[in-house]
Image (cartoon, rainbow, N blue to C red; front, side):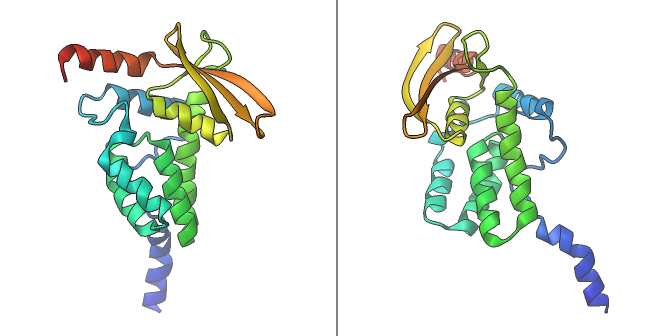
Length: 197
């Protein structure tokens, strides 16, 4: 009887496997926007603003493509502590937990994924350079474009500075242009170039 009681009391804790840092404190746009901005300003951020070049990130993607769910979760635990705003990794982790039947952890990481994308989408409407979506990394542009099921047709840098992304959906039947304000990652890159790092 004591064993059964212990299992019932511990089940919610055991079932909810959190990978990476605890981001459960916030669910709103403001929380995720601040998280993204804080990450972009952190001097200890090693692979900002191009985290997809990090070897650890590459290993995670390889493991995901190979269907190695436990390996993805293992790598992601360390990776997301370094880069908590990597929306695509939160999505991959969510899918791994879904495969394992761990729905609390699946929904936790899925909510972070959508919280990060919602933060980007709430920063503008993306229809003009003046109302561009504000990103802290170029990778955020691709995460949003991929999530809406679009393909990139053409990309160019325009005044703002903004990335002008000409995209298509539904096998090319729907074409649109989205603008992303890239001033934050560009300023960071320029400062690194000037400092010689």
